[in-house]
Image (cartoon, rainbow, N blue to C red; front, side, top):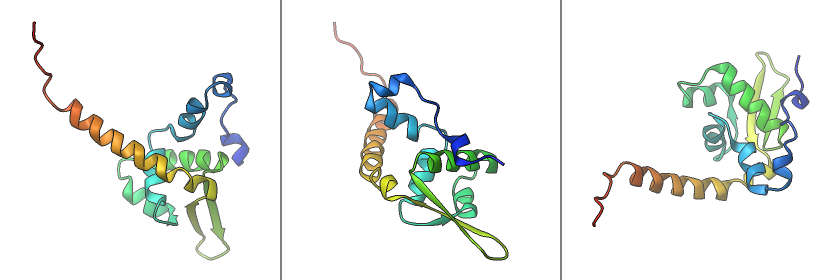
Length: 124
């Protein structure tokens, strides 16, 4: 069975000289922004995350959750119950992403608005 170390990012020398790239590498992933959005209000079980991300496979969600955990962004809590129960939550460090994610949402909304407008005609 893989450990969280197996899901850690490979060391990229470009990150050492560019903190923006380092930050983007942590949240980059098809489902990571959506997972972070689901965890913003509080804890969630895997099934709740999967229900919210209808087109994501269980394997894809699992891998991205493990990557976020390896990067210290989320905390996975397993309860010794039958049936087993696992919950995910933003770590204190992960909660520091909330303002950044809010700003990215605003920027993305404006980008989509502009992208969907017809191109402006050029004047000569």
